[in-house]
Image (cartoon, rainbow, N blue to C red; front, top):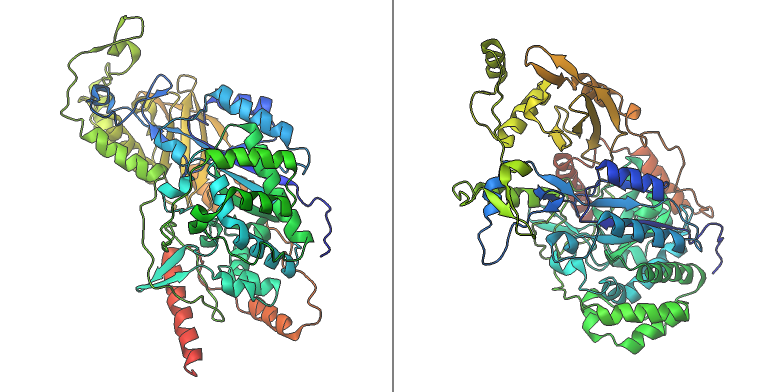
Length: 590
């Protein structure tokens, strides 16, 4: 098989971290200094809300002990630990140095292994460039090789532990043979069927059957149902690379380098070699891990061209990683607004049943921890000091663990203004009260008084436009405000904005009104989000060899625009029902 290898096998690296606050100036400045071309981004799957003592997260569940400190700190605001760092495109043979520098940076910033819940969610994703111009026959080869090797990738992806998917039903990295499902009126549809992909007639046909990817790409959708598979094909039409989502987070650079070379070898073999029936005649499914021998692994690694020294390292990873247990059951996608098929020419065969699971991400963890804090309400501390490692007593008030939120030195007019605005500052109130107060005013487009908020804390609030939230942090004694917007549909963040606060006579403190920026962002998102430019590249151009069937199929796609936006859950369900009815009518001669 021939392939043009110009820039093929270049890679992109995404690594999720768990124990670092990514919005601190120290983290941002050092990342820019050490890895100027790398970016840090939001990632709900690995982020965790924490209450901190200094910069140390306070444990919520200490077995056999009553956590007195939580009752003292229950009014403090959560801080978000964790996120993701993305590399630029790295040359296929020059990525090693970058991986060493990235690991050193993360360790210097405080990232480590631990038994906390965050480390069960961190992962490494490798993108290998295959080009958007990839041929249909190469898509089939990638799929065939993935089916033959997937069980091995899941075991090696444990990176010295058990694969993180064991703890969450592989919700973010489902097997090719059992992708996420959509529930529609009690019927469960997989987002694709690998058997149908293997017999697809063209690249367009392959993408249409892979979760209606042509339509999703045309709408610019990133968080689609079909991307949450161990071997993610949606990344090919989206950015020109195939994504390997199997691996846990690890901080051993040699292991990450070996894993990257494995992914490159996989792609190189699929693009240059015909199907090898000596090992590709068997589908090694996730549940088959317990039956795979070390000799079989070495045989396959050698056949796909993994270098000998890399094989030694991967064998070390294999020995240190546990067999990932899998129940072999279908699950419903975790996406609150799942994408599905919006066309009437194809629908995968339904499965008998798919279960729904609770996904552990930054939002659900936040809810659980808030409940834990509320339960501490009557658990009053027995002492008002702590003892450090030197035996020195320190009063909690001296280290800012106990707050008196009453605002003193306010005259009757100022107090009345606060009360009219919705907050009685003559009484003790918690940060939760203050945050609810600010949320209401942001939603109504009102001036935000900053005396009730803390300096150098990251706050997130919803806006009146349900597609984006606002993050802000008060700096320089609340004279400066750093803020940005977060697209809740795509996960994109806007550029950082810095503005001056104003002096409010009404509230006798620093204040600011975000409404003008919020409305402008809603009307002109391209002024804030860097990736809102239209991409006019046609990613589906390929030689049709004058095949009338393919030309007709392409005309159907171009002449049947989707009316409803596919990433809205209500529209998605409605579209699903319409598609199912149309397909059933065709089957009944309608």
